Image: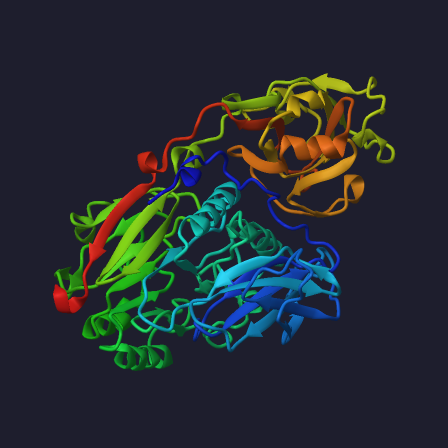
Length: 591
């Protein structure tokens, strides 16, 4: 049953701060990892900007934050280290440090509450549920390809967080790989890890991940982030999620034959017929909706069919699909069903719907999505959840409460840098600055205020405007909406509130500027109206923004901001837009 709380999806991000700032030894970018024995074990992983010396997880079967009662158990991190920087990043960007605490001897089907501590700084209290050791019902979600669409990636992650609270029996998140653009670059993993915090539910629930390596995930960082799932660089393993359900994670990025194929057959033979439901996940699609069949097909499909695999979860195609049941290259009710194709944020592609294995009762589509698998009493149900229209459709400022409209007049400084930091706050005399309307830039069709001499001359532009804080009254959320190329830093009354594509520093000292194309609007949550009023006080509020191009010689530049509140209209109900596919299987002995 889908409740009203989930139906009224007010925005593309949850109604709390978006993610933890990576600073000092503050625990940030937390994630949980399951591999073997998830009923009794979990790895708690996180990031700190500074190395620190004492990293601990406190945990208990009851919430303890604010009660004055200490957690019953604690465990020191067994593995700590610096994330590996690519040789091109060394000396140019700031690195960070990973920490992994492996908890064991947990109780099955139990909610554990925990806090992460690094050198005395603690995370919020979070919680997760261990897997069952028996045959009770549960759900898990699957999806892949979160990599290039940062705005959509954040939206999907926020939606996963809502689902985690909506379905108490949803216990895990199997990721099909391709988390980022290129796995050897920390500058790509860093925002993904922060965005992953958005999958934390509003109540603080964290879904353990079962990670897969994709073709965009080469290099050592994958193992440093997920604590060597399987074995280092091999990354294939089995997760026995319950006494009757097993998920085999394979690695499509190494040899599919040889050792991996021999291991796969041993696992399938071990698990059949003990498991009622037998699934696998890997990245490259064997029965693809977009690309050509992956090379593993000749090595894995005969084993899938020999041992009666039920479901193969695939990614890589950037579309939506469920095949007909397949055996011996033909539709067969006893065959394997292939589901997924990757929609956790990456731009979607048109599927080749004329392929025989996508015909009814199969399906194909294109939408950002997650797959929810429900294992019930005598059945397994698969539902493909797409984002509601309010998520998937383009953001439109005029459909929201407008605090600073997209066509507001701003003061701007181009071609030089302001002295000091006073320009960011109130009381600064900007009468000598020029006036203009967004977008500011050059070589883009959306430029209203064209900066004709910017290319090759300068790479930074500074904006200021103000609004009345009385406008914030009663607003459940306030968001900065941006279209930008390449990066920006935003301030309210002189205090930084958000940044993107700029790793450190500001003004002429800004560093680690990443390339970013201005496409659709991207939303950056700033908190509720009440929160902002308490922080900003009375008097006009100044919103100041500095926009940066990666280089002076860049082919274009864009900076288009606006400040908005909640949507003016209720987003569509979940039933109206979100169920892309729904089908049910019974166990093989009942087919």
